[in-house]
Length: 150
Image 1: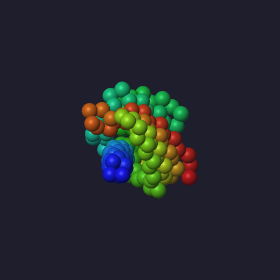
Image 2: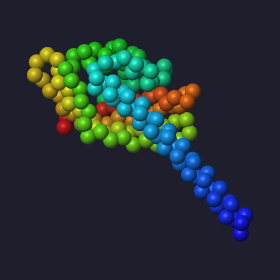
Image 3: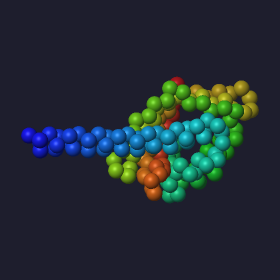
Image 4: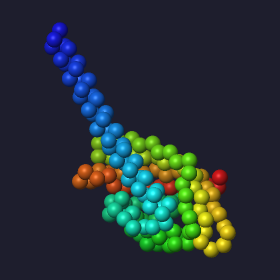
């Protein structure tokens, strides 16, 4: 009976530690995604590239944008310069971790105020991302976002 009790306790501890480990990875993935969201909201691109793998792939609303660095130089960077403000709202994220890979789905609304004029853009969006753990750090490998009018 003692042997059975020891086995059960060992299994409970093993499962508990594995679950805690997985939750830690989930939190780290959420931190990476939040850092990207916060960077976009700040309208600054400093350090955003550090969140992505060098050979990352970005897709936006059905378009192939290339690596994040290409997307940053030719799309996101120029866009952010034209904005007065960018604010995400109603944000939710779901993360599944499987080994060194994580799969995330984000849902949100956003509001953009353009720097020139009075134009405001309000949309509902969703993004799916694949992240990979590289040298202990989670990096965005692929991301696809799309939006529609609210």
